[in-house]
Amino acid sequence: MPVRLLLMTLAMQTLATMAVFSLPTAAPEIARDLGIDAALVGFFVSAVYAVGIGSAVLSPSFIHRYGAVRVGQFVMVVVLGMLALAGAGSLPLMVLSAVVLGIGYGATAPVSTHLLVPNTPPAMLNFVLSLRQIGVPLGGVLAALVVPPLALALDWNWALWLQLVPAAALLAVMQRDRRRLDAGRDPAARVAGLHLLRPLGLLRDNGEVRGLAFACFFYAGIQLCFIAFMVVHLTTVVGLGLVAAGQALAAYQVSGVLSRPVWGWIADRWVSARRLLALQGLVMAGAALAAGWFAPGWPLAAVWGVAIVAGATASGFTGIAYGEFARAGGAQRTEATAVGSAAMFAGVMILPSAFSAAIAAGLGYPLAYAAAAVLAAVSGALLFIQKTQSKA
Image 1 (cartoon, helix red, strand yellow):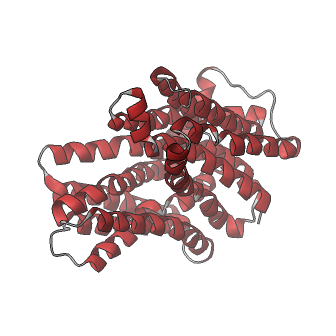
Image 2 (spheres, rainbow, N blue to C red):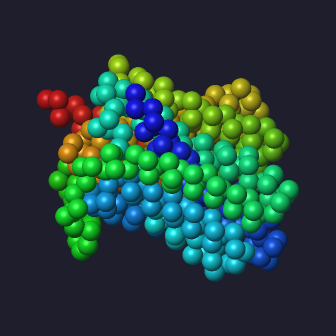
């Protein structure tokens, strides 16, 4: 196992994701200081992912020309820039910081895939990529646990600025291996014009990548629907207290974290990643249907059971998904991973908003979750059918 590379890419993903969610976790303090509505912080996260869609698609060309480690260092530079700008205490600079972070955030998965795939034994590739993907929830957990206490003890500005230390340290550590790991870069690779959009050509030319992107768009969007609406659903409809509802969401999150390496291990040994992704879509659909029918009187154990199953599928799929994008892309594994990241980011942006609109329109949680279930089931079924046809 490429332990050093895994730790380096895991740290990069964790610190970048922690930066994304640091402002939301400090939102009450920021809102009071700047005299704005704390709910506006949601636009910060949306802006990061919107810009991240573009940076994911564009990053492979820069990886080929400058090397994956150098682009990874650029990711850490934009993390440093975002933290410095956001901590300055100005609303315009905070908006700019979201754009700055998004410019690098989309490159995290392509950089990691480019480094890990050729240096990982094929028999453990899904497991390694799933471990790396733990950096996303880990960054969110660190932001939730570390930023609020620092914001109260020191000030929210310092809660951001103190993150400059580990980001700068990782930037320096990456330099140590840069010459060796980037030795295969192509200084003549083009980084201008339509060539930058070459990864999108895989959606036209590679049916496997296209099918994966379609499924991961919906899977990632449904993942965020569970996160965004579980607590409000359980408190307003089921009648649970805030603590109990929060515990159900925590069960969902923990299940998503713990299941990722388990799915990777299974995909490396018993069931192909693509078949596993298809099955996850079908189980995810069942969990969504069950969540839609949460009602007063549901046993807490049943609510937890649905949350755990939903977390293991809607949140646990990402590691093996990136492994499958890398496999389907072949020599263009970096480009395929970039397409996967862009698809997931788009799903995260679009589906929760559509879910919210459905609730606001009076359709209710059962119909909204039923629609999510149909999307998950269709996506999973299409993955299964495509795999079956490719074997025929």
